[in-house]
Image (cartoon, rainbow, N blue to C red; front, side, top):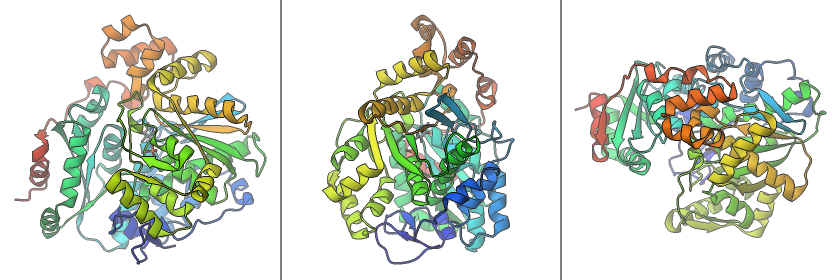
Length: 500
Ligand SMILES: *Cc1c(COP(=O)(O)O)cnc(C)c1O
């Protein structure tokens, strides 16, 4: 299988090139030539396989050029039992016989980014080998919280790669900051930027766009790459857990072979739900993909009207990993919906870039609505949902997952659809413990406790244990205390790489 750019640059790329490069040279996103088809019998025959074995079957057709041994090693190193707290990797919990929660947060950083960022570094190493690359790869990340930590955990001590994470001093929670500044690993660096997330992200984009700097890196045998969710190597591992959920339900006879499922996905950059769409294209029986947004409801409006308009107020919400106004991976969906007409994709993306808005025609909108349904949930709705789900089902949800559950209820009320539904849970409730505590504990306790104390209070109240990676965070050694101004990010990078 080969890959091409969604914006039409005429050249075929191997999977290894695609993973090494991250983004296509014309600014487009890499897309595969086709989606390998699996028969229903193939899903059924995966019943007695482990997550790792299922992953290998799903990934193999996409990762051409990777030897069977290499790919198997990638999968086994990523989804190890000492890396994931649950041997099933993405366990399902039943809320009702018709609604199951798939937990994607048993990895080392307690959020769903681990599903991809635990394997991407291994895929990157093999890609470097296949392409004969002898430069050291430098991964640069600007993070508002989850991605930075997950990337650090994934890339720590990976040979041939160094990783530098910039986080905004004013933009991450105390727990998130502590997770990053206590990061171990010989090839990692974490720097606080004196500014907000926008400043930090703009700084990193400037570094990437600075051709003189890229040349001087090149001369010193370094090469930039990206670990953000436009990299195909982050998207493809996410197809696996959709299929895994289906096969698990076949295995315990909750569904019949060929029966359709709905998936509800708390959505930000549209990477997670897009992987669900790809699973459907591969033959997985999926009825609706339900896209849940928070108050930054650009995608909800898009699915309802066909107009994507990012010119609106940005809201900081209780589900910060979904606080996004430009969902990059939507470009890959558009490419499929318009029958791979890259000229049209480029036109829409130019409109978005130049005017902040574009509209698709009624034929494309009809196709979009045929596959997706969308609604949103504000912070009050999120907090209420966490409380309600705890009372009704004794199940503790993080705010992102609660947005999903709230939208699922709206979907049911609107459609009356009784299809069995899997709600994708994207973070441990303890990763966003302060807001979860607000839903369940008296305000007196909230006001009098630190973020760390609240985690313990929440555990005492619910009896749900704090995941190991979030325990004793406060006592860990701080290994990174460097900070810089937004103007000095480039200098900080050069100093770390010892380039004069
Ligand atoms: C990143 C993230 C999301 C959004 O996923 P996308 O793939 O960007 O749509 C949702 N919830 C959590 C906890 C996340 O970290």
